[in-house]
Length: 443
Image (spheres, rainbow, N blue to C red):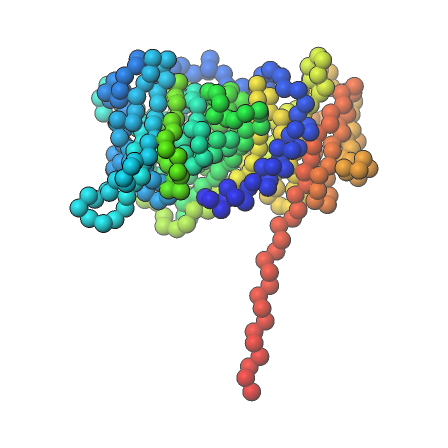
């Protein structure tokens, strides 16, 4: 994971620069496809409004994994109920504190040690507030940790499925993930996983204030939300519908040196669909052995749809029109995008000219449809390099095959509306270097 973060910094910087050029003044528009609570009814509401220690929460939550108090790998924490508590403001704190002396997991023997005591909550499977969760809406309002290498997460888990509503190991970057084993005829082979990452484009840090993260889990689709805006639609990798457990935890990486940090949670709410969910699938077979690999979208995958990003013009009085990203369906793994701000999702358009690259679609513009649209791509010297007249039919694809890699400006005009958008064309992946020829045979 460390190699991944390092390799993404150059792209994050590039996208941040493009966003600053393209975004202009921020505003408070709500996109058409926002999180609509009226379609759900509240099933569990954890408001954490009574101050106290973890004993107040014990009827609904465990404070360790059922299999132990640490996960291993690169994590350096040991989970204890003493690191969980609520304050008078109605906020739950999962606290990580570095120990003066490391904790030995087996006190009488040499072996693994943990440098942090930390907090987590894991939904109980017994008692009146047991939480076996399937199709629904899962929502958390929280403030993520401030230090680097403090790894907070809000996720659903139940063998063989894992769905991460969000994870963060940096104060300005989050990811969301789907991980599962093969367990049906349309997903043969080893375990599969898909991850998308998003950075905070605003002033200050993502950790400076509370934000809301949510996941809608339906039989045909997973939709991830940030502050009410859908940032990812996933139809390739879907949990089977078997009940999963709800988890929030604060892990600490082994290379962390922070003396303490906190994962602060205002509320967790679980909603169920107003219409009855379908019957649960049958028990899956055991997972297949093998390494993780990326998802495959095909007609054989349940619920697979057309992938790509859908853009639409956001126009309001007193502000210049801008392209807003409205839908990010079945994204490429590790695609790095800005997070929405104040209900608007302004992003540079990242394009590539090779198979399986993200496709871009222009949605219908507001008001009566003009007879046609026209776009022109300019290089950074102001010279037009591509131009196309398009009929009024929408949605239509935005594509420029054979465009050399580099930075461009897109000028889109439809009727009286004119939009300028930053475009970054990514180069085709280089083929593997040929192997060296065999040494000549000795005479």
